[in-house]
Image (cartoon, rainbow, N blue to C red; front, side):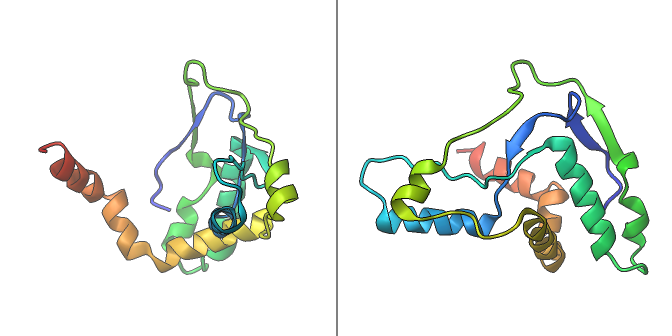
Length: 150
């Protein structure tokens, strides 16, 4: 929404699984309460998508959610996408098997992907003032001041 370039590694076809944050938090709570000690539970959203798909979905959703009167609406477009050389050794697909968490604990994601994107964007709209400290670089400066001097 600031008109900054969106960098995409390689051709943007790397695949990741996506999970809404509240579903993730609920899974962690359920593992803590119901999981077996010293066991590992993979948490997966069952929503594998290519990186470029995610970017396009976010752009489309922002276009839907921003009011016509908001000047940032015209900044949000696929023209911002810039492809850069992929990282060396970058995996084409990240995947895990979440079968155990469903079988043993009964957890599975509740939030549909598109709804999770809308809720996430809504959260950012509601917290824009706080996010300015992160996007302006103030957070990075704070972090460096706090931890590089100790």
